[in-house]
Amino acid sequence: GLGRKCTLFEELRKWAYRAQRQGWPDYRQWLDACLTRAQMINLQFTSPLPLSEIRATATSVAKWTSKRMNQGDFEYYVESTHTSEIQAY
Image 1 (cartoon, rainbow, N blue to C red):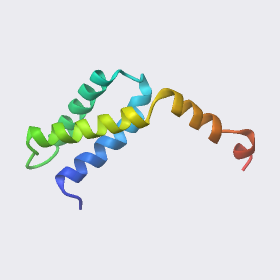
Image 2: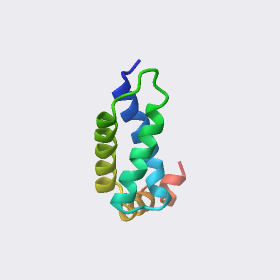
Image 3: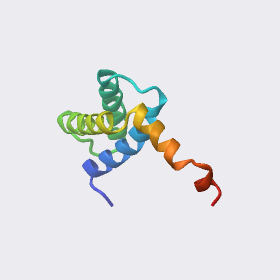
């Protein structure tokens, strides 16, 4: 299986892709939410990662998703991938 840090990153990013669309929070709120979720994931490990590793991973995920996933881009994605021609398949 994956190591703890990779597992933390994978679980956190998958959560983040869905969670951000729930309200498009400002960056500070989003970073806090990512850190809280990362800490929850870390509690599942037999030997938890240190806070510095959790914080670094949460910051990375928060930055990436806030820069590359925003409401306007998501709406464009939905509009361009949910056309009647595509839905007919």
